[in-house]
Amino acid sequence: MGIINFKYHYFYAKFKDMTDTLLNHRSIRKYKSDPIPNPILDYILEAGTRASTTGNMQLYSIVVTTEEAVKEELSPCHFNQGMVKEAPVVLTFCADFNRFNSWCRQRKAEPGYDNFLSFFTAAIDTLLVAQNVCVAAEDAGLGICYLGTTTYMAGKIIEILDLPLDVVPITTVTLGYPDEWPELTDRLPLEAVVHREKYRAYTESDIDRLYKEKELMASYQAFIKEHDKETLAQVFTDVRYKKEDNILFSKSLLEVLSKQGFMNHP
Ligand SMILES: Cc1cc2nc3c(=O)[nH]c(=O)nc-3n(C[C@H](O)[C@H](O)[C@H](O)COP(=O)(O)O)c2cc1C
Image (cartoon, rainbow, N blue to C red; front, top):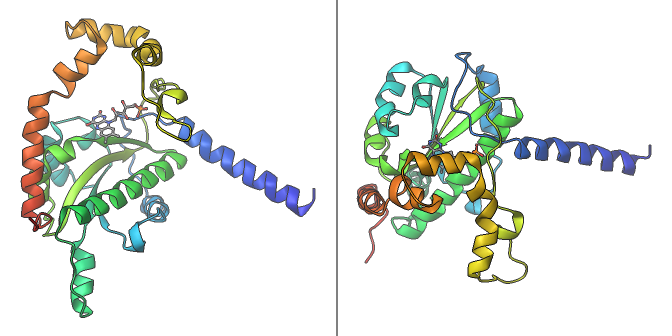
């Protein structure tokens, strides 16, 4: 095999490995008690931090929790979801301008990052690094689960983890060796989420067609019945992600952003 062919095959083999990892993603909510060896955890974190980052500023910090006592404190912030205490590692990914601002001030540069845009920029960096860590972890045979409760309970998490000014927790990931291998969850067909050249507005019949398979799935039918609802959409709007909760948690998140120094503008 010539060198070009070899390179092509090598590239293809690596590409296949990587997409295999991506295509096999499932959230893991049950973990073995085996600890994650430190070199493996460091390798995963190192791989994660190769993620693209705005201006190479790395506007994030990752808090690694392994101690039972800290997990115990964090657990109620995540509505006592079992993974927090069961997983050997809990990672809290935080948008962080604190370190960058300190560097600026120590180098005679005045930071102008006490605003919403800067928070959003740091939040983007944070989610990119989080997802890269997750993919690296799954590639290494570990299981992950994101916890969306972080943004609901950001204020309390800030207290528990001693997060300073200019730092806001964005998401949490539980990490450990899987003790379950659930079925892959469904996804909408590609045509539902991809628009060619320009956005194509969805017609009523598009919506019917694109959601049909999901709506017919036995697991979702059971879900509808369990919650005594007429449609699957109602399970989302009336049970899982309700307007009143969204308003409540929006208010508390905006207060957190103010307190952490990201809303100092008209
Ligand atoms: C930002 C975010 C927050 C999530 N929060 C939770 C959570 O609090 N609890 C949970 O069990 N799963 C959580 N998940 C996992 C989703 O439920 C899961 O990704 C989705 O149902 C698709 O399933 P899959 O990851 O197995 O493909 C979260 C996922 C994301 C991306």
